[in-house]
Image (cartoon, rainbow, N blue to C red):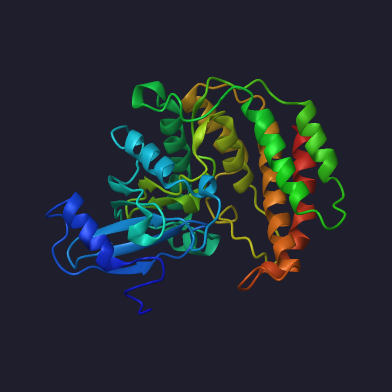
Length: 340
């Protein structure tokens, strides 16, 4: 395949579809490229030479349709686009697998930078870095302020028993990749189970909300929230807990996991919690539980990657180091829960 025709993207078939569904949208011949950085679903930028769009589809050879639900992603950005929440404008959803070999959707191309590391933030300087991260908090408040029923998302999830289900789900993920002793992980899971907080009113939850899942423009404004594959209706404080976790500097030499928390000017967890509480009006007194849950979830994800690495199922660099990070995440989860 040439760089202009990456695997999983048949530009000729896509053009035929666009011309029939959105006549006059594309003018010149289409070219496309894979956008690196997505966790699982494949994201391509396509252009006719004048205008650009983005195509999202499941990974090649995907099996679990539920894990890569394009209709669901398209639905949530379509519902949120008319609100104050910055999401790309949806163009079309295609459930016909004949076109690209899997369901996919097309949305507008939004300009902006996803900041993945402290090094990438460094040129912004402390003040702009601080503003960008506080903007991330404010945008999360905007998302959680959306009335799900008012935008047609009343049935987008099952908020009742949400935290209990989440904890059990990640416990099952852990069991599926157990092939070594992990001190403290069962203790952490049990402690989280004993202290389940009472969830506030449900909101649209992103599920993986962090700095590198948004685009930021030259004026440090968030132009789009991306990667809605984990979104649902549930406890909004799970998004806050994850954001707080990612705001704790990891202090790990040569870590294969990139975080932005050590960047000069990056607000600390306390300021992020305070800002969210002040702007949302929500009670955040249980935030330690949600943050500990985020540490647990990441420990499980990393252990899953380590497990696949031991089976020779990973491709690329850095996977050999994932296993040694897991105890660090478990320890942080336990400490966060104990110290509140």
